[in-house]
Image 1 (cartoon, rainbow, N blue to C red):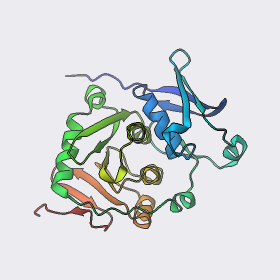
Image 2: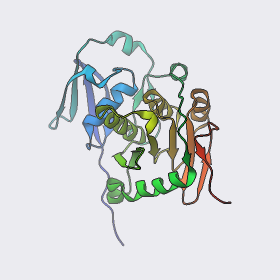
Image 3: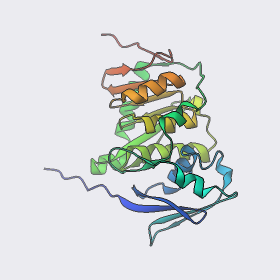
Length: 246
C-alpha cells in the first residue's frame, strides 16, 4: 500500500500596520501571494501598490505588513467577523449585504464546457501538493492562451486568496481569466472572486444556495461538479456553452 505524506498547516498571525488582524491556519507555500490576495479580497487594499513592505518571519511564523497609508483599526474591529467553514479556518469581514454592493460583472467572453472539463483535469494532474499529500485544496487561473497557474493550501479560501494575490502582483485582468477551485463555492468564496472581478468560476464540487444567489445577482457564471464529462451550470449568463452530448 502506498502512503502519501501528511499535509502541513501552521497558525500564522497577520499583522497589519502593527495590528494583529487574526491568526490563520495556512500552508506555508506562496504566503506573499496569500497576503496580497487576502488584503485585497477583504478590502484592506484596493491596489497592490498600497503595500509598502511584507515581512514573513519564518521563526515566529507571522506575516507583518506595512501599508503606505493608515487604516481605521477601530472601524475594522467593530465589524462582525464571519468565520469561514471547512479546513484551514479563516475569517472574513464581509457580510452578504456587503458583497451585494460589489460591482456587477460584465463580460462577453464565452467558453465551451468541454474546454472547462479538460482544464479541470489538467488542474488535477498538476496539483503537486495534493498529489503528494492527498489533503490539499487548490485554485487556478486559466488565461486566454490556455496557460494555467496553480496555488494550493490546506484551506480552499486560502488557495483562492493565493491565486488572487498572484493575479494582483502580475497585473492580470480578471475578465480574461477563468477561476477553477477544488473546494465548495460558498458565499465567502464567491465574494473573493467577485471582489477581484472573475466572470467564470468552476469547481469540482458544489456551490451553496447563497453563493448561487449572489452569483446571479452579480452576473457571475458558476459551474459545479466539473468531473469527467459531467458538470452543472448553476447560472445563466451564457458564458459557458454546453457542447457535451448526453
